[in-house]
Image 1: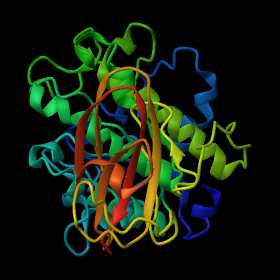
Image 2: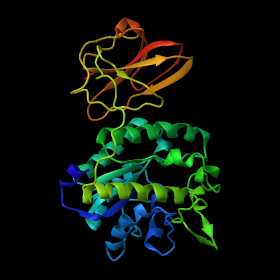
Image 3: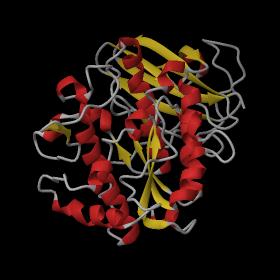
Image 4: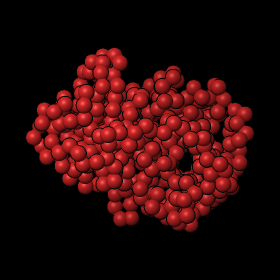
Length: 357
């Protein structure tokens, strides 16, 4: 994060908000600029809260600012469309060092995971190139539609992969909302986060046990925690977090990456990663897969149905293949240009992401 911050001079005590209706909602973060704030005993968050509140963007704090980069009904593409795009307009207006980013709830309507991935990676990469530290947030459940909600884990897989590959903070809002009554979502529409109400007034910054049964309250806490950590890392040179267990394997046919848990996400660059070993998958197709491939090993211990999806970035044309027992074209079970779904019995399997170009 400190390396990102060296790319351009920005105000380290300012952040910008990027998203859709759940972000532009006045119950998201704005209450931190007022008097009705209860951190629930989390004194460690006070320094960051004070620092962001002390800064001013056009006369108001970043918490209370009405952002140019979030609008009701927006998909991720809206934030980066036009010249200058709303993303650039808001950065110019705020000179922010940090950006909270949450898109996907509306993107699901298009049912195009690859387009969503391409757009969100582009958005975040634009921020990183400008020296802005993005904090990516997973999207809430879609309680208005079972079909839409079934897509949420896949869209959140993209957000997690994005954070992993760019090594930026990830706020797993979806995980924290699942245990809440109604998933922290209003029953009016099944889409928007709800807020704790006391005395007829919304209290989104009440971060006590009572408040944290509501969606906006939980998101406000998670976002403030992430902002506090990122702000401390950039401004006070605090030590890095403890290193988690790293991936096993390097993605080659001789040393596949190990899928050790589900759901599993990973991002690789076939210009650098993997190897050019398999050119065709004869048991499945005669398609030319002469580019580099990245191999993942998956040990199945009980019968299960598994779905694997590949999102291609840049000019790459990536396909996904499922092999059983060996890393060889003759061991192919099924393949597709984007998604394979297969009922698996116990055994050793390999998912291979291979490239036409």
